[in-house]
Image 1 (cartoon, rainbow, N blue to C red):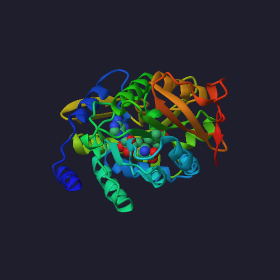
Image 2: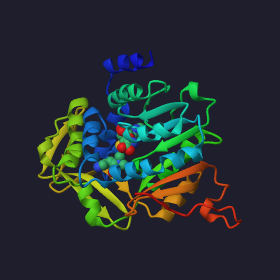
Image 3: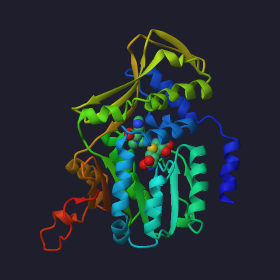
Image 4: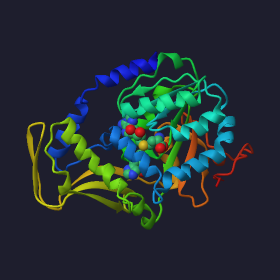
Length: 343
Ligand code: SAH
Ligand code: AVI
């Protein structure tokens, strides 16, 4: 019944007014910038899935491996019958690993990419036929109400993929605080965070040899042309990736390869050669910074898992900032090592 309702909605899908507003504003202001969430229309989500399989893109396979090794320990820490609320669920591939161990009471995938969300829910409900699934289509940085059906259940927020890295620090803190408020008392959060590492590894991960990430970035221009009656000559733009060491972030831009003029929604825009519009930041964190970020966002880290190369962290946190983490206690209770290595 719920799925039919979602399928019905997709037939009447309209252009999101927030997309129009963000693009028109993002192209008009100086410096220009378009929020990364608009990279994910149906095609963008497909291209992101293709990125996750690229040899250069280490985050997905690394996090999947960490999660596979840590899943039973995580399940024991969170206890049974939680509702798992996933922020930016995408294909929910990693979620399957968690769901196989966690004995969840319900699953709430939240994603802005509606068509992709519906498809992934259909696939997931086949794999977990007894699991109540309540998809929520929308922007998790806005105000989203959770389905009433999970109101009384204890909750685990699941925020994998280092999607938190696509927000600047103040926005990430705001989001973490909003998650704490939405998930409520007694909730826990399992979050994936990509670590700072050599630019030699980071840059190819966002500028792969096959050009899939370039297609993902340029798809934003196709989306603008399609949904906002644009005339952007897509071949006049290049995919540009930079590593900003001071900010510890990858920046993805669209760069004009020549002087170019176009219209969007009836408004005229010009780029001179070399001018760029940023389309995504991907912030990387040190271990201490990641824990501080969580604390600032109203969560207390209680366990952390990483991989052999220490490329990626999976952190389990409890809502509230009062309790010290296991590795911070000196009262004899501390049993867990600061970092549990899993390969
Ligand atoms: N969790 C998956 C997918 C990560 S890709 C993984 O770990 O592989 C990021 C996902 O978040 C995409 O599916 C995208 O559509 C979604 N997303 C990005 N910004 C969003 C926002 N502001 N609100 C809701 N979903 C968002
Ligand atoms: C979803 N997010 C965490 C990805 C990242 O690595 O920042 C998006 C991405 N952009 C280009 N490649 C992957």
